[in-house]
Image 1: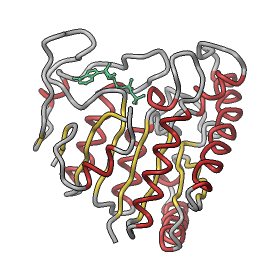
Image 2 (image 1 turned 90 degrees about the vertical axis):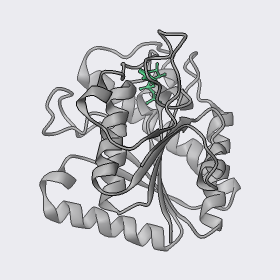
Image 3 (image 1 turned 135 degrees about the vertical axis):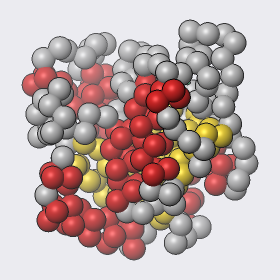
Image 4 (image 1 turned 180 degrees about the horizontal axis):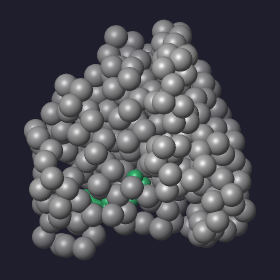
Length: 257
Ligand code: ADP
């Protein structure tokens, strides 16, 4: 079966006012359920826990202290999963939650256990919903215990389960030759075949308050996919049903292949 990993970013899931974008989430759930019904195997890597937690608490900004961020992520993660559970069940779709720590990279046994879990879920037609386990991952600066961002985490998952495609949904149409939020003459690059250091110079940081990785981490994810002989499509998550189009081979966003 075709395996697809879909990563959706905070800026797509959360409105600028901090509320969950229920319309986008609903469309995402509708679309992914449709793919499973077509016989595809689907994994969702979802950001948005901290954003959702901030919204729950009526806060607008991430606190600086890590323990507070982790507490907010703990609150937001259940909020997010509750909404996913609700929406997916409307489409008759079962889900399972997988919270990962860097253990799956460091310890072969942990890795194998997680891979077995993925296999069982996918075989049963369940959509695993993946996020970093924010409450266990300790220090944002300590790269040995954190993945750091879901862009690279999604590529890690996609390569580990040998996915055919990583679909990255963001708040932007694709990868541009320069940051389109800063330069009005930026143009969309339709296909990238090779990623070198020079390409990273075209990648800027996040454009929004809650967004994290920006384009740099998305290019790194694409690099991992290309190295594994697989591909990635970066497209706008404004209307997640765009996934139907790009899987049908329509030209949308940026194809890394
Ligand atoms: P997400 O929450 O979806 O992960 P991010 O805010 O982390 O989104 O990253 C997407 C943002 O990256 C865009 O909205 C844009 O502001 C910024 N960006 C920087 N450089 C580029 C580029 N070359 N092409 C497209 N977007 C870019």
